[in-house]
Length: 297
Image (cartoon, rainbow, N blue to C red; front, side, top):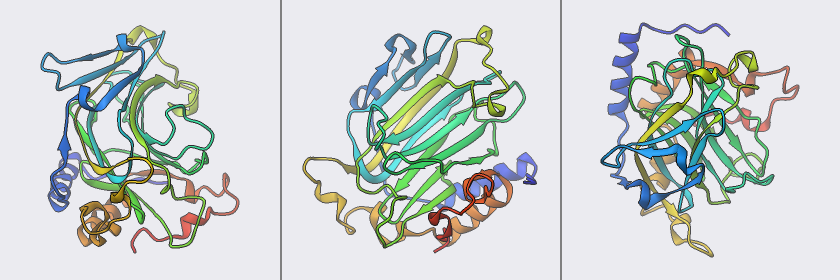
């Protein structure tokens, strides 16, 4: 697939314009202690002196991860990340939602995965969607900035009509539902929010050809400004899941891309897509059914 990218200055200007076009209700922002638990390797987690920036590190022994204390079904979920700089080949930083902390075989999942690379080569961002343990719905994009130089915002809008993956408020992927019962859109199971850093040099960089250089360890990813405006799960069933009147993320305007978002999304499709499973005819001899649903409707 031939990819043409505009000069960086133009891209940054467009990104700034895009960010100003998408606004939402104010969302809650909280401390790490309020929201998260360490999943493993607490000695690989640290914070800034004021506790506002959180760091996960990876060395040859282990990585690290955290998850929210609460689980949610539908809403807006956002975090600022700064990725591992320098030679990060083989290193994956993941920011995702999942219905099963143990990543069981029946899980639902929404993934951002940031695939490291050799020094001077751009990061690749991979997204994926799982329903009842079935994934294989990868898309890969380039970014229009260096994600290791500063913090950038990665967000998910999830309701019963669509899932949108945003980077700095720019929609890079739209995944639509249908009114019919189906096996591809995760809308039944509440999910926790997770992030982790781990070694995946068997596949992450050039299909596993580039291995992690452990002499460069530790590899550190940074986080701040977690925010969520969503339906926090309460057994047996929270009232907010079914309402379409009290929450902006489940009102009609959030069921579709706005006109300005369609322009942004079209620009991303023209310039930044590296891989789309819907167009992989060697992998899928028959196109997955969800690929026939228009993201523009």
